[in-house]
Image (cartoon, rainbow, N blue to C red; front, side, top):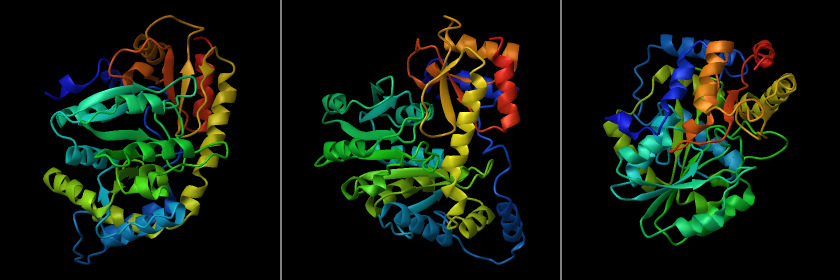
Length: 375
């Protein structure tokens, strides 16, 4: 049943990821296993025999730290008790937010290319996706087009910044335009900000929490996996005004809310340490630049990336084949994994682009470039 909601060829992302490609799909978080102190804190939490009763919506200490971090960064105050919820990853938070506000026939504005989990969430809840393409070459949003696409049935606008797979960032003017568009409407904004700390070139992340009127009608989803470099834990959170969070929590109760308590205790002990996330942008920028330098020996051409640990590369000077076929060829002939650009669209894309993950160790990145010299 679920498969009918998957856009054409999306399954190739999983297929490529499942193969033993040298450059895998998932982030390795700067090539190491995460922050060492988290391992020690997790062990301590697991041997703690205290019978603490924890809300299914998250350990209050962790929710307090999340709320304090948002206030320090963006100036907006969220109540830890009623406006912050810990989830089993950002995808769970995203799905619960869609399910809470999108019903049969409701229209949802979806900017493409888009994370391949967005469309199924809309369709499974009876929503009608309204597709708007990001405008190349810089993948910006045409807000005049957005205004033309809004109708009385528009219920939600989904944004993602920094953006996967393009590395685009929304700027201050974008957020102001969005705030103006939804004022006086029933539209809610669902903002995926999972890569908020992986921003390059001196630019800044523009959270919906920076804009009071926008924050009043927005849900933000985020991930500890990127902020605290915790591969494999799959833990995230969402924040929203209390009246909106009530609806999200109703959905989470049905889905089975609750996250392994030791994980939450360990994260609560480190999330307030600014050094954990303040240097992420610089570290990943160095990797982006290193990978780009190594790839100069190939015929692949990079597109600008201003955030996330992904970068699009064009192969138009090499082949006229479909991106799916090229991605399979890279796996089979070179042992290199890359996501086909078309996997992020509801229809096939004819663009000769592949998404690479540059979060791997430098020796891996160098070997990838070496392998691709003959492509």
